Length: 303
Image (cartoon, rainbow, N blue to C red; front, side):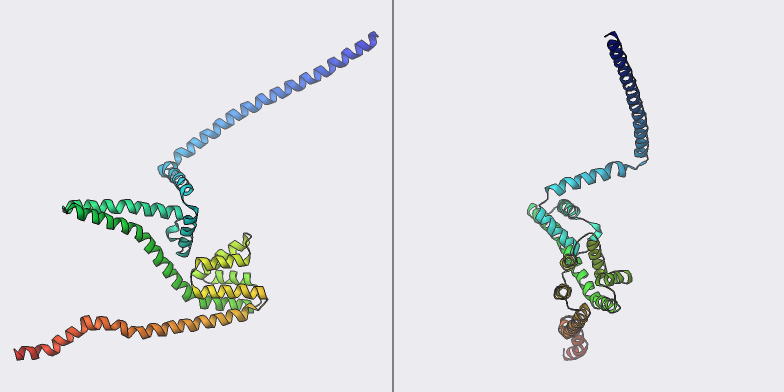
């Protein structure tokens, strides 16, 4: 009986000593981790403070404030209007790299700055109060319309450049397809060889395809970003040809010939309109001068 009790006490002491050593080692390890974390965290915070001190005032204050301000404003914007504005900016080629929020901030800033400048100028001229109000109102409306008009001009200019580049770009795609390349490889070849509006849109479409979008979705995105009827027709023909299994070479060749024919017709139409447009400067500026030269001596002799 005493032997069993002694064995039980020895086993209990042995296991207790093992647990005590393990607990002591774990406690020592935790203390060391806390010490290391404290000193390393202190050193890293010191390095961060040194890096912050090396940054300029703009990087430390202005840029974070501007970023947080844009984030708050973006949350308050109507999603539908923001998406429409994003589409218009994409159609205009994202002038100055502005997003929808930045464009809205610019428009609101003009709506504040223009009336202040116009009102101050009217105050310096000592015009009546009614005229001051009219000037401020006109400047306010101008601040609203000016960014929209600028976007409209950029969209029109970009569409004209796209229409000018489209036939040559389609010829290059057709040649690449005839050489045995696939459609995506042909677009890559066009992007690498040509620079312009259409090439940039095809480059963006290829990036969308690499990110997981289908070819149809990428081409529809081009059609939305470039509001050119000829390009919309080409993209619709490409999508329809892929759907029906028709060869793209013949489709693109036909579309290229149609685009060149339409461009020729537009040039002939502009040439036919030129004489009518020239009538106004002729009547207003040239004809009076001719009358003075031809009839002036006769009138003087008659007098």
